[in-house]
Length: 289
Image 1: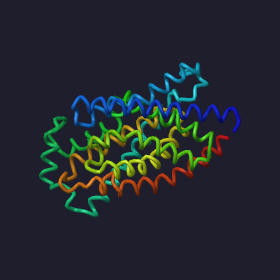
Image 2: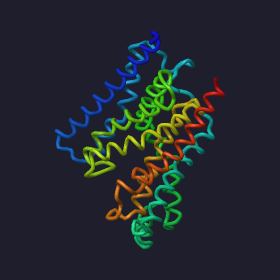
Image 3: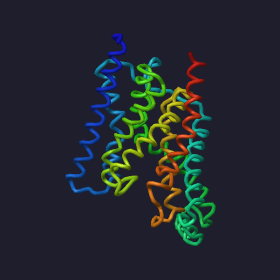
């Protein structure tokens, strides 16, 4: 192993170790405080990967914001801010639609859906409300909440995965990155997020989801050259999933292990699309080299 490779291994291990340790520490602290809800702990943890990246770059005296920085602090083309979240929305939408086609009882009644939409005060028309809600969640919410999603993307797409890609083959790099990213979610899952009542199986499924999702987001990072694009894509995934499921899915029927973006149906969709993006990534990388 060359000196440069040894340095990369050290950086990967230090970043992963500190990030997981701090994240689990925050989760455990919330647990000791008696906070049963997972979202406060997860929200507090989301900036950790970026903060660890910043701290390590400062210690190692690497450039953060200069042109030669490798974390992706670059202004992207405006078109990416529209096309990328739209693709993520379609992925989430397809997982919800297929889930409801396979289990029609999962879809809430029309009157119940319209009543929920009517309570949203943007407009008196529930159909227009739905359009505005989706528009806000796909394009605006990820930007408004950029400190949260940038906190994750700087760590996973900006710091960790590029180093793994320099150390090993793309397939192994994305596999390792997805496993580490998935394990980062452990405490939230233990507290009942995503897969309530299924901590072990839920962790395994989260890892399976993070691997192809990481491929897609890394492709957009490479394509755009800007960390802000996977940031808005990640935000669109989270906000769209919450919105569609909360308005359309019957919570009594919704089995998190099967339905929706994080269930088996969503994971299969992300893997199928992820394989396409993996090939795109390889082709793009070859073109750029």
